[in-house]
Length: 498
Image 1 (cartoon, helix red, strand yellow):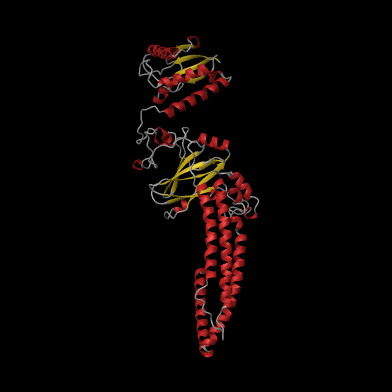
Image 2 (cartoon, helix red, strand yellow):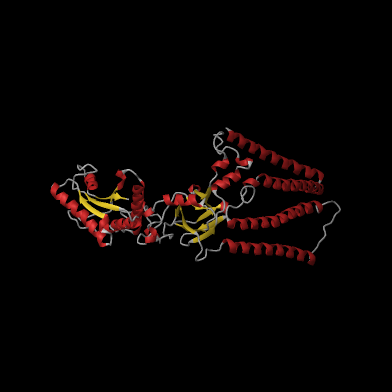
């Protein structure tokens, strides 16, 4: 119904305008063409002056009214180092072009008023004026020179790459219809190699798993960056043209298929600090959701965001990605909680090209795991905590021969004994209940002694080591299941003295 009324009003308005035009035509025929022309000039010149004044006042008033929503003004000054110079360039450009804007509009409407057609006044013909030509050429040239010089200086500063030894964080953002893939380097601080031919549903970036640098790379669901840390973003696209846009940091760069680009910036204001800044403005002290008047206010729900500033398809709107700027300690904590994409998604899947290979990243994870459990045991006063299952110590089936990869777990024990000189331990062998109990007892003793002999061969003091076998007598799981039997086939490190 509302739409019908709107359409009806538009039809009536058009009808009225047409009828006014017909009445004006009739009046012109009655009064004479010249009289109508001069009357029209008279009113149009005055209405033009009124329009000019109203237009300029409204332009200034609207800019002032909305200034707290505009980037660069009110609370929205740049949140990065590079953005400060960009805002300065914008302000210089705005002042120069603003002066031209106001003066040209005043001249336009003033000349329309002053030189309107009137009875008995003849127009003057001016074919050429050197003075005016010099003025119209010199003033724009000076203005352009100032803007270009200032702009080049800002460009060279903003687009400068990081130095070869400069401390910075490098991440990668890849645009795709319709989401961003963001990749962080792992502890090695390197982003691994990519090959578009290897892109699959499971491997969306085409990471090359034979490159060890890829194994610890992470793909979080949000961008978290430390404040006051220089960040270099490698920007790519997987399909069509996208645009990497962080408006609050004045970062904007096309993501072009087949042509990697980059942007370097240093965030200077944390998300929480930006929220507190917004809090001081009445415009942001309103409910974030109008349907929840008692809910969080706009300043409380503010988030930096990554957007695609290119019309990349109908799902373009969904490429919003949350960006958080935090203090260094909070960033390190967040980073420590992120998991390797390869280890959580690819490892031992059909796309894993390194099945059966013990990787450096796994060895390092095992060291961390072992040391964490050891330190907890040493700090604990509970005797039950003094028993550590050596999860990665294995023997060949039915044998006391150590597998090749077991040396890494034994190396962890050597490291513990070196770190804690007063530490003495017992190596305890266990089996499941499959087969003869006496044979299981013998096997468990042989395995415990094999581990002890290896440690002694690596210059560990034999007086700090004992080895015992317990056969099938101390199960920790149900022997009626394969999983339970596997848990029972184990070697333990028991702390005798700390």
